[in-house]
Image 1 (tube, rainbow, N blue to C red):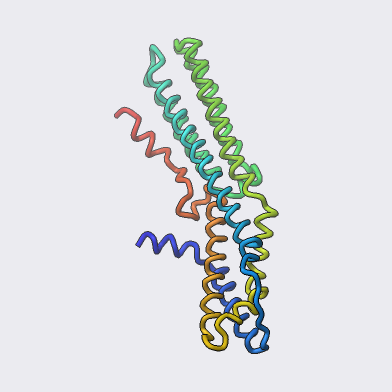
Image 2 (tube, one colour; image 1 turned 60 degrees about the vertical axis):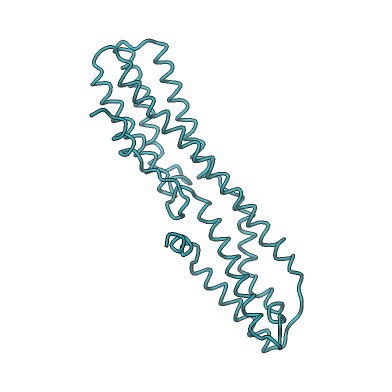
Length: 261
């Protein structure tokens, strides 16, 4: 059942339109008696290779985003532990402040990346993330005033620096995606595909097996557009559209797990 649900997500209006155009192209070509052979490796060069390259690039970026998000989570929890365990006095006050800041950071990051426009335009949600980083930095000075040694405060600042670097890596994944020109090129050929290859599909098995051309046209169109949709879903790993997207709203889950009752 889950497989069917995920499969349905790669079938959209473009799949239907391109497939119908391919079938209509076969019918029109036969009616006009326009049938000829074409090298099928042209499909591989013009469409499949750019698509596979884009899918591989998008998947690699998704994996990079996963690694960066894992690093942010680990360093954020480590900073919470630092607020909770390092101060020799008033531990509860520092622990509550550290927990609140960690929750705010997770929420700000989730809000920023869930809004695709924010990633592309550096909208108001980006300053909100850096405002939390700023509060963490100020909180480290409060730890120093609370008796935490300079070496430990320095280590906490290193954790903060690591989180900021990993956040910027995630930001770059969302902002600078797979090559736009390559995407436009492959999409243009996918949309032209039903017209360019209609005479070729019309010639398959005709007139002995008239349905063969329609079947091949349907399969080619469906597969190519589905691959294009898979690439689209992998392109932005933060928008929550694809089944492989990152689950960013994890602040409450993690903090409920690590906070002491």
